[in-house]
Image (cartoon, rainbow, N blue to C red; front, side, top):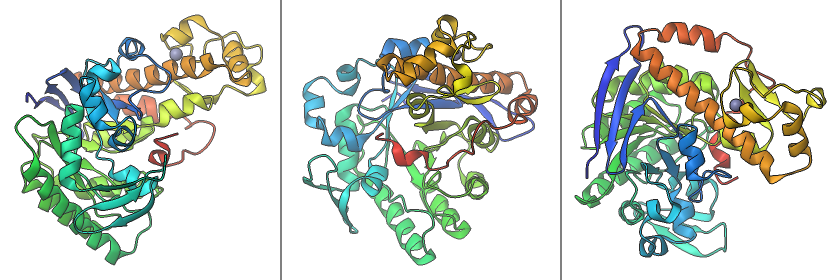
Length: 383
Ligand SMILES: [Zn+2]
């Protein structure tokens, strides 16, 4: 197992870091954004198209792959990388979030969680140990521990008991990890309570994880609370391990979190929005279905160099969307993922050149777009 994290440069005016993560399937730069490949595919794009728009690492959902086609099937077919024809790094989540948001009739105990599949109603029992094994079978490069992702808002006593359980599960996950297994990241929980977040992070950093995630955000809480959680948590995280903010977010959320020292992000926003005709541009979001684009010959974003913007007009993209054509999802997704990759690449360059504050002024002083962002992006990771 070749997992390594190296910090190449630290920003002088914020906590941002430029880094590089090495895995058995190659390396990638941080801060990094991971497009979500829920069912072993980033919806509507081929791996070649992902590479072309600059994607270096993707996320796979353990819950979905475990239920369908099943991890033993994926093992027999050569592992996840071979099965989905993606040669670069893959991070798999633990499935905890999906068990708690999608599955029916879930029952949680100290031992693990019993749940009913949302696909066929079959009963399953997952333990922290089994979740580590499943991600090893998949051949993931970075695995996440099983955690309980509590809803917002949650009462203090429930959040406290749940945070303790997640910490105990993290310890068991680490004990089960084998030499050949993926790198293992812990997940800080604690809801929106400062003392619980601090207890969680302090207990987890005493254990020997290769990275640390902050979970339980982007579940419907106000943005100010998400930033609070980062401010409470990040000072306790070790400098030399990557930090991953799960399920976040908008470009602005990502930049704010980078400046608080976060290295990794994933979110369904660019892909899901693309399929809904919502496109990110350098002057805010646009909804391509609007009548004002009916005969608009300009590309989605005149400053964008993606395949979609090089070849197609807003008018054509609007037509494809209204006609419910498959190509609509594909072209819109190419643009949105390119936009995110270009944005994160811009952040990396700005850190390298010591001008992150200027980058922030340029990118976060504009009107935010057409409508307020919804925070609960992760609720639709199967959509
Ligand atoms: Zn474009």
